[in-house]
Length: 343
Image (cartoon, rainbow, N blue to C red; front, side):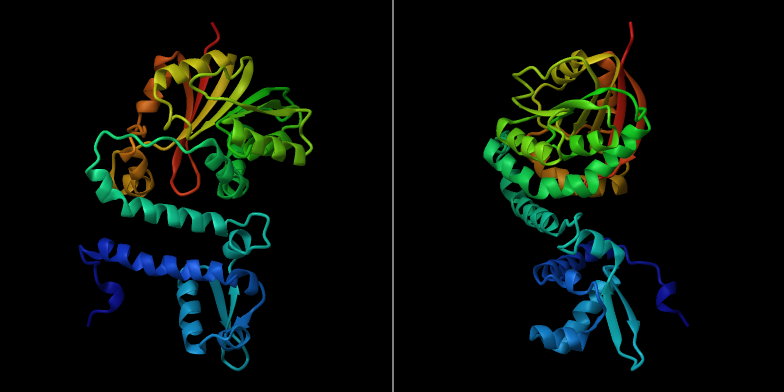
């Protein structure tokens, strides 16, 4: 007799899973709308929760069970044998609204954005050669105040600190350029972790104003400044020991020219940490990344094939010292550490 666990998955299972994922997304969306993970910082039964909110108890039980299966809720039986539910550590850390690392609204923004992108694929198929304009400075500033800020605090900044800590001594007096730094919270985190660091957050003027506010709020205005400009047309400064460049190169029209500008901005021996997604050679590895970047590609933006960015850096006389995976919101990326050679 065969058991369910003995059965091999059907060849169509991955595509059935795509349809099933839409239900899971709706379950999480509903939990965020209702502040469920905040409420479940203390254990509740489905009946208690339903009575407090005016919900249908049996529906609540099924919904909580699905969230439990998604590892967003833990459960245990009480003395009466009734399930009691509590948010998992991950949910409390990132999805409870009182957490300083709350990313619930950022997740909902990404969900809505990806739904819109997916719905527009058919239109993109029939509009070949049309490159969408970049978001306006005002829209980019709004993003810097909202989901980008949350994601930098909870995901990008800790990853940046980890990478930089392996490259730089905490006592070194080094100068940073955070290129395309959005809300500036990566630079803020680095300045807090490395007390001798100083530097510049370079962004579009409207977003640079947001970064300046965050720098001032952190009490770091004596060491960090936010500078507004266009990376293609304007100078970014020189004499930097370290440049953090994350997801900027997807948008520049001339990759070689931009990398040459960054090479000139570094001191000899200075390092560029270049964090961008590339399209892997293996389909399973490529699937998750392309699900996020396909709309960008259809807008005419650049997402390089695996290894192309390393070649482009080498062509500009960078010495590529290290290549490592790094966690960014939504899709994995690669951090390339490239040094300006000392002549």
